Length: 292
Image (cartoon, rainbow, N blue to C red; front, side):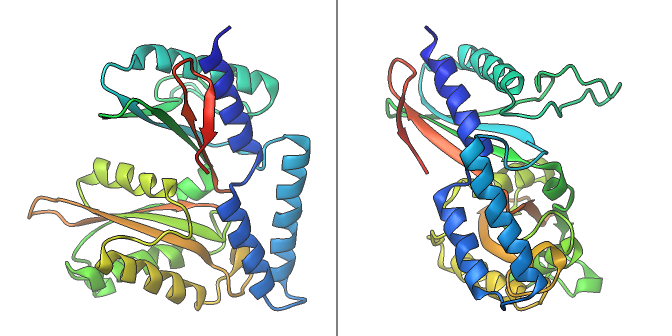
């Protein structure tokens, strides 16, 4: 019996069908904050019903089950090749069972072979550590929210955005403005200040592995996260762009070294269907505990 295959299959099922508790609580609080009888309240009520039905029926929360992103923290000597093979088998099986929609296509031909497996799909990110445990986190990121991500190269004159934290603030809020009504808000931002074009986006997505209620250990970034969250929610964009108090559920920001010639700010956007889950595996590949 392949314990790892079974564990990854259950991880995919639960990630696809069940919103993590921190996100669910944020949505409940947002519903309480919205003015009664408004379209914003109605939109959040529909979201709440959607979440309950998906969990009850063990069916995908959204018809777009998204890009499949595995983040694996593993010890030195861990067999990454076998894990990758098993992860692809689990994705294929999850698709067959209906936990994932058949929505991964060949970019040249448009062909869909119905497995959700192909070049770059699923995406596997391995990170070695010096402890024995294996932790696997999974993010299912829909295409609608991926479409409204943005990357800025500072300075940007028209936004009066210089190469400083105020400039970062300006472009992050610009990304929120550009996304309004798109990307299935209320959204969550994952941001990387610095890096190059590729690592900036990659690191911005790792911010989605954080809990919504956590606080950034870097004081300057913590202040920026709280400021952008408060400012964005005062813009009146609201759920699905219908107006209201809930434009964002969270903002998570990291910083990476850059070369002096470049100053990128990479903004990844996550929809309200914030599908993120994780497990710690024991030595046999069974689930030892859930991480969220």
